[in-house]
Image (cartoon, rainbow, N blue to C red):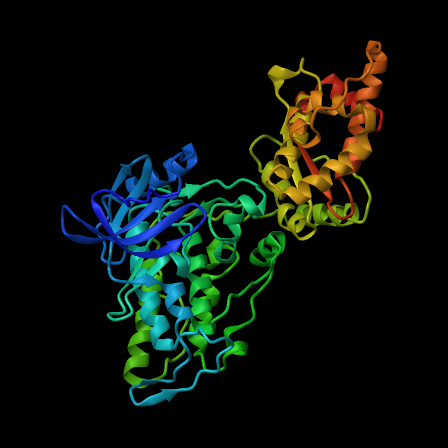
Length: 499
């Protein structure tokens, strides 16, 4: 909790937001007599990750000089409390501003616009364009400086209600990279906000993340501004991930026939599932938006045109689509469909090193998400062929690490399932997969057996474990890479039909 005496050096004026981890105040800096925003970590014992996030946000923005991005002046420590000192533009979050508004008809060039709202918070076309254009300008600046924001949403956009000035804020998870790899994680542990997240940012698209991820998030925000609702809503995180990967949102024209087709097309291009189909530069997006704004202000209408005509590539982006493997992908998906109905199958993928075998296998991940399945992997190592079951247990440890990020209710269900499957041999599984102890606790020891009997018991326990985690409700794909270095013990697992 914050000290009752407040923060030395600042007169707190207004509590703007209080969240689980941070508190945001409007304050006056007593030294500079300047209005500032204080973003304060709401604990006097911050974790390493929390401290790193605050310092990262300062480091990545301290040299920014853009009128479309909130300035971060400094990072300070006051009585063990970590705080960021930010520019105060007299605004509030776009989300709060939208929630405070009702639908009002607007007039442009003498033409009255009658928008049929689906909620009470949608913005007019003029207000939407006036909001999105400064964000596009912020993206131009960011992408020129190799910055990926990764969390564009109305909560991180600040608007001054009087001047209508708009700025982008919160760079706590931004990257100073041209491209970033994403890992397969539990949806509850993803960086960013799931409702606004690009398909590749979910880690389930077999694609790297680059600056074009921000276009998708901006597209979701634009969609929300024009309609007052999100393109996808669900209380189930996996369902939300699947929506971003595979489902198309309800068209803007269906929600509101008064929205010009070109805006529908721009939003659709921004929200394309594949990054190659989106805008390829923020300058191209900005040109289209300003063209729409100029036409609407002068005539009250916007003529249709092909979006992205002025889209000049600002940086080299090699397409990540897998070409020439359509037949093999279709075969894998057919096999996975059979497995999802309760069968077990082994698939061998062969070929020279570097031709894309691993990339091909990962093409199954989007379909796995739809089926609420698990993808786990291990890699055989030519220098560890003397370590029995190393790749196999590596894959199972990968599974346990995934379920450890699930909710307490789900963890309790997994504990019951695994204990019922393993029974008195749970200790064998924990010895092979140490992370299991965090779920199963401390089971009793097992009796000692001869070497051959112990091997048979281990094979039986691993078979019970795999059968418990691979179900129709949660199909399992186990990818074991570099099988040319497979160890003899793992070969024995297969020969005894334990897998």
